[in-house]
Each structure stands twice: as structure tokens, then as C-alpha cells.
Length: 239
Image (cartoon, rainbow, N blue to C red; front, side, top):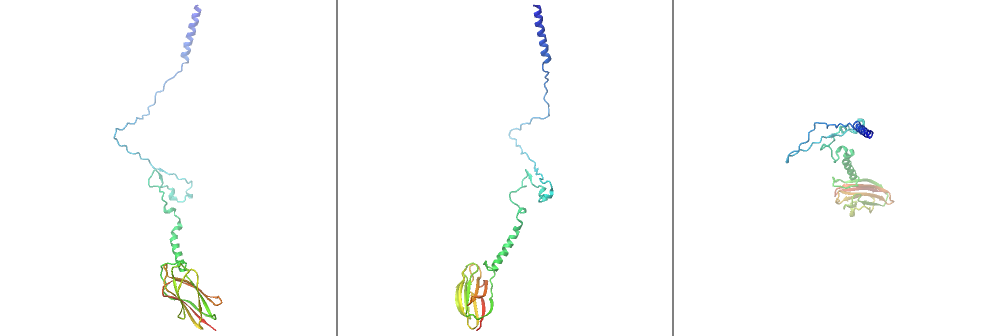
């Protein structure tokens, strides 16, 4: 019996000794003091000024400045967070360089069209008589063809031959109006008088003169002719 009690006591002693030996050796680490003080809550009614965000300068994305289109642009006046540094409105530096020539080109084109009779305008009227030349012919008659080569704006023309009225008033249309004139022996002077100016400009007319064999003797025009002035052709009929 004594031996049993001694054996139980020995087991108990060894168990307690093992628990003490294998118990975890844990030492708590005290918290580190970083010296940061908690923020103080401002009293009610205090106005807090807004925080200012510093501008961030955009980096140069070009590895070589030699490929940059404009060196001044690479100095980057554009900054993130900075007002008035960027605009959605295109500036003149990005405009088409040829745009500045357009007004002058349009002006020259307009002048050329008016000079060629392809466009009418209230420019300076031509206040002088025009001669389409002197000719000799054996033809019995001439065919006079007249039309308005510009805008149809009411131009009127009077046709005479040796001061004899052939047509007192012809309205110039886009199509030719044909007039037959029998030639007198010897001297013949045919005249075409501008009776008015049209609503868009001076009197404008294109004229063709053909002989009795349909040979073209004259093909010409007058442009911006003032009212009362004439274009003429002198023809000498030979036997």
C-alpha cells in the first residue's frame, strides 16, 4: 500500500515539474510611443480654412528634346491643379497656316471673275465706247448673235447699222438672240448701245458676228458697260 502511494506521489511531482519546464515563456511588448498627439477637436463655430493643394508639374514625356515639336511647349507651362493653365479653346498656334491667305485669294478670284465677265458687281462702270475692229467682206449679210454671259439681270441693247435702227431694244438672255443685217455696198458701221445697267452691275454682253457662210468674223464681249455707251464694228463690203 505504501508503495502505491509513493508511486502516485512520484507521478504527480514529475507532471508538475514538466508543466513548469514546458510552459511558454511569453513576455508582453510594451507599446511604442511615437510622439504623435491626438488632434484636438476645434470648438463649435470655428471656421476651418481650405487646404491648398500644391501644383504638380507635368513631366516631359519626350526622351529627346530634338523630337519635340516646340521646345517652349516642353517647358510645360501646364500644371495639374493650377488654374488658367489649360483651355479647351483652340489657340492660333494650332490654326491652319494657309488660312491667312484665303481672304486675299478670294478677293483675287472675285476680281478675275468680274474681269472675265463671269460675275457681276457694282464696281466701276466702263464709260467709253468700244471698237471690235474693221473688216472687209464680200458677204451679202451678217448674222449678229447677242446674249448676257453673266447673271440675267435685265440688260438691254439697241442695234443700229449706218445709224439705221435694226432692233430698238433687245433683252439679253442666257441664250443667243440672232439678228440679220443686210450689208450696204461699201461702208457699214454696226453699233450696239447699252440702254441700261442690270440690277447686279453694268451692262454685260457677249457678241458673235458671222457672215453668210457662217464664218466667224467677231467673237468678243463687253463687261460692266455704262448706259449710253456703245460697241461698234466697221465693215467694208467689196464687189
